Image (cartoon, helix red, strand yellow):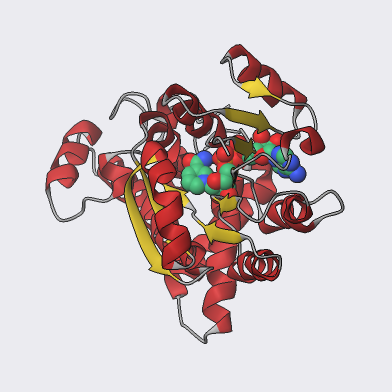
Length: 304
Ligand code: NAD
């Protein structure tokens, strides 16, 4: 059977990932629930279908999903017109969404019962990583399924890790993003303090990039404009990775920690800060816009 990829969820991350697969010569069809997103994909010359049942047919060899939350993955895989009952047994399922471990395992269990291979494969590296195909991809699933998925994952990412059994990809990703949420707040606090101490922010940023206070938010994705080109902070905090998504991931981390009686006070505090930020109507801003709250009146740049 010739290779055919069905890709579902072509938002901020899914679109560049699907484009990289197309550009590598793979036969790929895409679908998204949002009409405006479908129009963007059409302009990028992707083969778009307008409903899920046209997308997932028995000749599909791989399904890749890049959806916001567990409830979306569950609906797409297990719902009324769910994928699990539509694909052939030879089809490989790759869920790249960041979702809760339980949902990931539940979908995987159902797939296994139907004789279908599945991995969870959440990613990190942001939209820039998706565009440049330099994503870090964290895989949960059997070694056999991992090996099968590897050639496709290598087209979308640079570092591909086999974290363990199904659900471990999301477990690893949740741990990673708890750190990311905390370090974005930490970077914002440090730069705000520098500003209040009247030290040139650009100099402090350069120093931190080369010193022990470095972190991904400092070296790649600073929360303030004019430090590194191409970041959401230079684009009025258009995501990128939305504050709503970070709030979701910090909630996932909090729930995971509770489930194994792990004490994560900074993760909890980061969740409270992002929760309030989202409640105040900022879910759709990039998560680096948290710097505005941290900085208060230290900043003179706008967040619209
Ligand atoms: P997004 O909101 O931009 O894209 C998600 C897309 O899924 C949307 O276009 C939406 O219309 C579509 N969708 C939702 N329900 C659907 C359904 N039932 N059927 C078809 N399409 C549906 O989100 P994103 O930023 O691309 O993130 C996607 C996932 O990747 C999330 O789990 C997020 O946590 C994770 N992630 C995002 C980033 C980032 O920087 N944006 C980085 C790493 C991981």
